[in-house]
Image (cartoon, rainbow, N blue to C red; front, side, top):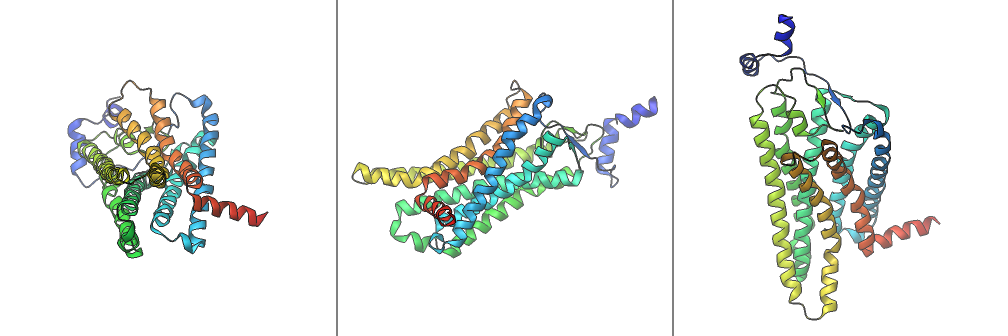
Length: 329
């Protein structure tokens, strides 16, 4: 009994010694619960989740195909939209297949390395999506405040550099997540109360010190959300100032209409994300299954709705989609 207790529940000095040594215990596989507290109805939850994933696949592939095929759409707004569609495809595909497998066929086990890879892709591409939304706000600012210089300011070279900056930022900010997690020791608890490998859910399972992981995770979240929301807010403050100077209500409505789809996408992405972040950090009275549902839907709703928003609100996209189906008929 003493030996069992010793190896099952290591003392703090032993944990610190293991953390500072080069030896590491075998990496555990993790057990994804799915939606804690709703195990009996998880197959019903999988149905809307599967529909959202299907919408994300069909919608974003359609957006990418139309923009790629139509050279008249090779403009800043649509090039940024194609970036958003590609990121949404990766984001949804990083989350939905494993979550659906957990909910439908009870494939709860996930390997340690696979878990870290999934976690990196989810958080990195969420950061990239936020960066693309900032770039789209910049495009709307230039189009409305400097319309005569739009094509010279946002030429293809600049757009390519912006896209590369968004990609590099997402990778550099999030690559420390799996690196720091590999330094943690997991003793006995390997059950993740989630449908996917979420950073803080994995950190909470460690039996070694996690101060650095928690501090870095909070710093990245505040940097990405805080700076990106601030940049978008400043862009739209200048846009609002410029639109209010335009004579005639019809011209103002037309100017606002060019920003309508982007504003909808911003709300779809940031509002659930900020709410999920706040409930995770401070909402101790929010039921855990509510938090898990919100966190999972946050990764699936934007990729599913973004193509619909741009398809309905953007005339050029809508006409191209209708044209494709008309030609087939």
